[in-house]
Image 1 (cartoon, rainbow over the protein chains, first blue to last red):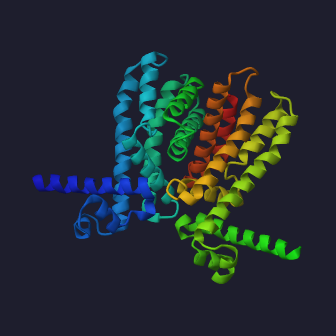
Image 2: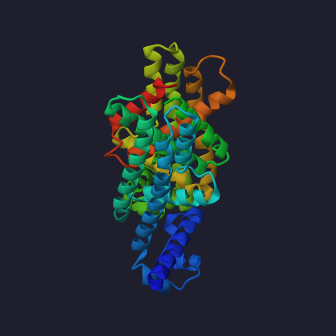
Image 3: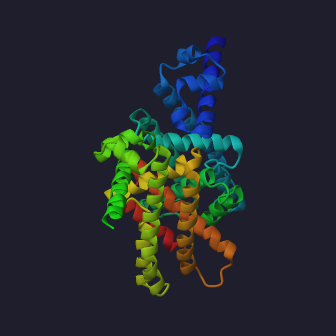
Amino acid sequence: MPKIVDAEARRQDVVEAVLRIIAADGLERASLRETADEAGLAVGSVRHYFAGSEELLAFSFASVVDRIVGRLEASLPDVQAAAPGTADHRAAVLALLCGLLPLDAPRAVELCAWMAFKSAARVRPFLVAEADRSHREVAVIVGRVVTALRPEGEPRESLVVEAERLLATLDGLCMHALLQPGWMTREMCVDVLERHLDGM
Amino acid sequence: MPKIVDAEARRQDVVEAVLRIIAADGLERASLRETADEAGLAVGSVRHYFAGSEELLAFSFASVVDRIVGRLEASLPDVQAAAPGTADHRAAVLALLCGLLPLDAPRAVELCAWMAFKSAARVRPFLVAEADRSHREVAVIVGRVVTALRPEGEPRESLVVEAERLLATLDGLCMHALLQPGWMTREMCVDVLERHLDGM
């Protein structure tokens, strides 16, 4: 089915263009026209895949969530394979959680768009369903990591507070690394995350 | 000098209108015209105080930073007056840090605008100076709180990591409370912050 493969590849090219525009100029600039220019396509070609800018943005948001959640899920078996308390377990947890931090340039573009979509969902109803899915699916995975890190038999309410605390710290770190990279360097990001894990 | 007082009061009315627009519809909608409508003024009246939308937004951002930093500074003497380790000290620290969380409706409008301005500064150069001041001044105050909470004689680099960790957690909590209020309730915000302080 080469035609279907081509269509999917083309849609992903358009998504890449949307993410680059958001990272460079903000979400408001990611119109169909600007996206077509950025992707090197005619506006008509973009319209062939996306009926309008809302569909384009919602699809791009979903793609980013799929990538982030997919990356976290791919790291989960290593966390589950290692025995809690060992250096291997700690390294696997750190590797998984670093998937939510902008520690290299492509990751920064992707997470910058993720943050922009999540924020925009507050005032753009067509992004809400995807924002809720993003929050839910990331929370489930981080919740599993927290459960593996905490003493057995800890009450569920206490685990939820720990999971929300780790999620808040990760999103705050991501935000600071994107907005204040001079202060929140990649090294500082990892140092802060390591310190947080030490205290769990 | 009633005229100067009136002018300042009028500028603050316009700022309030900007913050309400950002909270309800996002920063992109805070044009001179929309702001005049929201404030119940003619566009010409708004132009009397602000030459253009960039000046309006930069002034509004500065006002929000002044309020937030002013609130934190007003809470600092209580932290400094109480002996570390006492219940009074803990209560004073919690009261200060809660000044960075959207725990009531007016605070939510203000912090929502603060987050929007900080994010927008990434792609709007005219907001950068104020974003840097915001980060710096809040970090100084939170740094003092962290110094009061940690053991005496802790190396400076370690205190910086703790301060960045607390700042990240607070901004992450603020973001989650604004974007996912169904998950991150006011009670959960305070529970997470208390847990964080327990671990410091």
